[in-house]
Length: 148
Image (tube, rainbow, N blue to C red; front, side, top):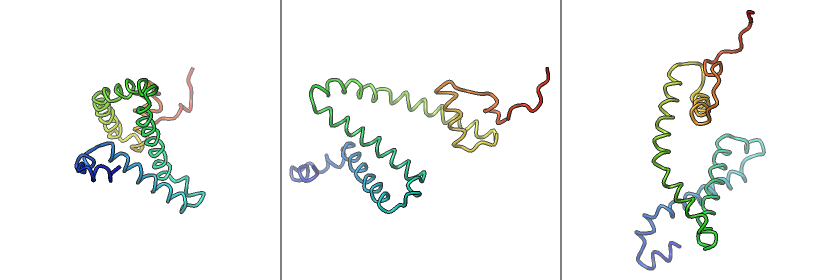
């Protein structure tokens, strides 16, 4: 694609296009994950960084697949309202993430013995999913003695 853009004098348009940067970063991540698969041993492929990169890569590939499916008229008519709605809720997600991060930071500052990642999961479950347990939030075990 880049050869066509450059030969038409549209190199600046290609470089400033967000879709092209997304495709380029997905291509680089694909190369990195493929190289890691070839070089890593069986045990090393269970590494947290590798699994995270693989998960992000798979998510990006499915996103690109949806973008390419929009070109088929019968499918694109069904997909466009959904993708448009995803772009419309971006401001809401930004505000939600700010409040979520503020709550996580406050909970972590209480020094309750949880790591930041544990605080993130606890507050996410509490705020977004509505699943909270007071004893788990207080980091206390079950009482040793029950008085009747």
